[in-house]
Image (cartoon, rainbow, N blue to C red; front, side, top):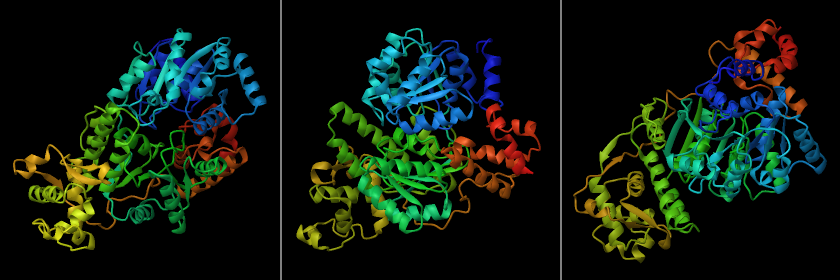
Length: 599
């Protein structure tokens, strides 16, 4: 780190942000960017990415421009920075013309430390002309994976951001993302002209998140049981693939007593914004949403993220689950997954407007996610391996806590593949299971499938086992859904070796529903040494402060800061000042009231 920068950086870290020390590579990144270097930063959600550009913005002369894709994120971050005494503002569609003019004037007169803008606005000729006059400290490109056409959240407007290097070659740029496989990293570097940038890759591990993937039976009931047993009264996000399913799931959960709200792009803008505001400002709200919700959500105390439908890739899964436990306290990533999810996603990919190469990569990403779902080993090891990071079994995922059994499913696989072939490679798993189990349904009789030699050949296995057999045959690549046959299963090239008995097939056993795990925990249990009654009073005080200022509670103080106060019982301002998350401005603003409450 630049020796002239180091003492100032540490001083600002302590006095402005209220942190005693840097985490991980933060110090090196801050020093590099503050000294004028370009950087690509890959750091998990909750790892402290924002500090990597906010601190250099204060160390360098001029204003930092932060390119951010969502309005909610800008508003939250600006509100939080203002609480710290940092001169921050945003330019987006929520401002009227007078507010826009005032913000532009503040930028030109050097009254801002950070300005948040959307990529579309930044690329407007008027905005680029505006930037030619004031001193620009740096450009921070947040959610940089949006530039990748192979990524899970491609945004065409990000492609134009290479103009920053052309028009402002002397201004350092820092691109940041929580999710990027090697292919996406290469694309970020190429498209943003960051070939000379230093690359900082932190561990992708989020050890506070417990990963659980269950066989989908009755997904809504399974979800409700999970919420009631593990996270009653706590904030969470439930992701669904379609808007219709979002509406139905939110209504059903609400009818069961869960404070659930819907969120998707098909809703009226005012209702969607109101639901988002309730989620951010009230405790214990569960948001049921499409993936349109989340990238700009800065809420640190989301205790769980649940998926009722399979995401399209490991990047998407990692990005979405990463919204849980940003405060570092225990959180859950829970997903129910079945063969129907695979059929639906493959059909969507087959019918997509992308070219053959796009479809090929999409299928490869889906296959990698299926490998994560079906692994008998540690989920975290498999997840991190996708991002080229080696790790040991974590002891904090479902397969570590209750290792699944495997069995030699070669004979069952041969029967299943034979049934697919003999019924004409046009029927889905439900019909095939009826044939194998010898159920003479109306449809089986209609097609004369009760006369086939495979009829009843699998009567020795129950329905749950056959369901997992067909799902794993698809995940292992021995069968594939045919979108032209409405999800009917077909054989693949690799099927032949199994049918001939030349290939052994190992599968996970179907696991019956067990009672609550003895190691299950209730979300973010109160840390040892924390006065629970005092913590409750502090949270009530924080809620009142947030209401008065019209900001989310976590903008005032994070839960972890309140827990630190409740554990330390500080008697004076000096004692408060050493609590993580209390900088000089917050000490001045809230210190006397906190001490009064503590007395």
